[in-house]
Image (cartoon, rainbow, N blue to C red; front, side, top):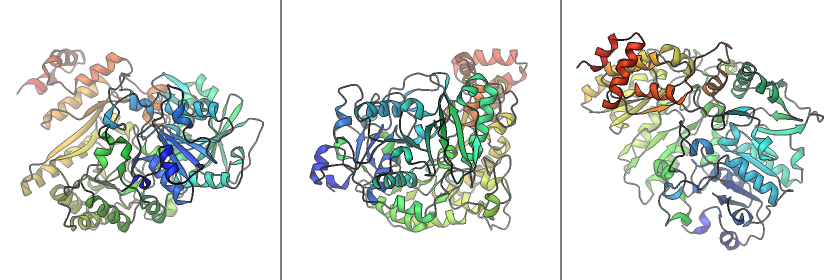
Length: 604
């Protein structure tokens, strides 16, 4: 490979191409890895495939004379901005608002190479340097801050990110289709302010300027009304979530100060041909050579030998941003496209025979959709599997089984492990006695061929009330999974471990719930390792409850642990077995009227 195999990130590289001008400059908070798992690379490659000259500015220095922002000059069409693969505040801070000491998307894992609120910072710089050049924002940070949202780190409600960033237009969700339409419109000499009819975009207009469209409009409560009343804000979120996950959504309008925010409905779920076209672009699958002496990029190391087989997730977990960003309807790649990428991976110089993941947002949703999609056209459920699995959902696991077997046939592949989380409620909630849906065959093949010592799953909690709010299945289902797991372990002498993930301080979770979780998991033989404290992130159901104190769907009050002490006390129950926590746990159980649980935890 040579330098011309990557998208250019230096003036030297555009000179090597003989370019005197760049059409589009993309700025990202991540280092540039030319891989389909990194958003800036995907958008750059998609635009390139449509004939545009695209350059990237990864992790520009925003503290100096801003030379990084100026190196390509003024692009012919627009600047595109993404904070990176994570919201910059989630990237920077822990659930306790402590500054993280590393950044997985930077060479050497070094912290400090992107600003707080990166989208806003980058956009404001560009608007000062190039006031007449359109700025388009996208990526997960812009996507999930497109409407009035709660920002945990400042502890306040913020308006659409367009308001503070001063960007001209935003793209939400997976942006390949929208960004090409924006580029084409500008290329046809349309003004950025006149681009108002592209799906999956959002923009501000003066209140006096009323825009007509082919879509029906749904008027949200204004930003000012949300500031005044938390229940109003909670109710707003219900409308936003429902419209974000409908086949045929309304256009959303929200007043903010002297402006109206317009959020156009999303595109239909990508077809197989469309998603294949994005993944089949000529990625090198490698970090840019410029980083060779700066150390490995941890996020890349995790996925360098992995394959993403689909997008979207119909789980709708209350604390998760995936459906808000990728949508609830699954877009699956063709087997041919996936195998083409697998063959690329096995030909990499450092490939030792192990594929680290064949998965997606949820590993076992590949090719799953409605049996009768006309019913899906009318559906407004934010999740297809809670509180029960939709009868119209095709949960057939055979396409996935066949894909695993196809990969296993390759002589260069010693093992393909499944690193993404699986939704065990898809194959355990209903029985499949005939084997028609492949439930038992899937789990058996997964355990025998695709687990590398530890199978990680996410029951998240043991309390039915907390799990209901989380949109997760009953803990009884995890117990059922463990029995099945242990039986197969013994049958095939596998010596595998089942590792569960749990969350503390989630809305509705009380100290009694955490105490019960400790007792139940101890009964199953666990001393928990994979745990986390709930972090409110923009545009999730759990975050709206955390801020407002109300369930947006019922408008009933919900208990939330908010103080540092409350959160610490809940976390201690994860680690009841540690000497430093034992006395606290015993005292707390007595105060909670659960003294009988002391023996359950500490009597061996």
